[in-house]
Length: 482
Image (cartoon, rainbow, N blue to C red):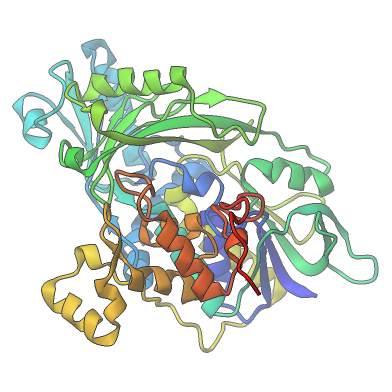
């Protein structure tokens, strides 16, 4: 009998696990994929929103603003990259100025600091590449950018070090009250059974399926696909702020933003689907990204695109986050409908639900909680002094494996060896960016595969891109003589 079982190891599930690990509780995180950050959390805009867009009084507004305010401390404690580059909301039509002003007023009601309307020459002073068609903009200095992979991994590692357990390749298919004691029994597709006094439903686009197993009030999640284009680092300095267009009924529109790693990101589209696995890109979607992105920055160099991708947002029918203990299901806590601004809100959602669950269980604070975690050293960003210190400890930090991103053997081995370490090519890529660069893993994959074999004792035929079913080698061309 665990105290808490969390279904889903995306950014919100891992944030909840990390905050719960502050308490003397036995925690288990169940994830159907092979690693953390494999669903919505891995394919998004990587934006920490300021909080001006959500309806005042909504959960989105509350947790966005609270999560934004927590981000500096969280990034410092857990050692992941976060930059407050500020965001700009662009207005292209003078007739829409009242809407921009209303957005600013909404932000002020939500408690967003520093908002102001900018017109005239100051707009180009803020962003020289801005379209001449922009009539005014809303400046939001607290907006930021983050690496969603490293943020989620950092939360998970810290939760793990503080006692939380993680089970991957574990898909929850059944949930029912325990027959002989208070709590819940969870049944998995793999034939395992777990029991927990409390359950947290952080299952992303499948959160409605989990909720509807036990709750009389039905929940409906629509997967909303967003397609993106990622441009090379040569284009990364074209803009310094995150550029939004005035929001519409389907979201915040196509944005243009730098990334914390120096690339330029354009997207997303917004398309409601029925298929919860439809993460493919489309010619129509990418054309829309290019067309709408160029409205904000006409000089976008799409010939520098190095990859495109799509992600699914969990859009709930009520339009707000569904968070808290569900009616008629004591000990079952929803964390559902976590679409934008979910990444920004995750730290605050984690804190809120952890406090709710700890109070319900009468938990005591963990006496030896470790709030800090040290990330993997990044050779590409190291100073000469830092590099010398790394090489004095481990010479493998001097052997470059991924040329595009300057990722070394030492970084890759570290990514595999650390708590909740990488078990696949994508796991390595998320942690140290080997394969994220211009050639998109064309050069470094064979060596990364070798390192996974060495560190994990794997047969070469079992090395995968992203877990079971994605093995990279089909067979041997020649067997060794005995």
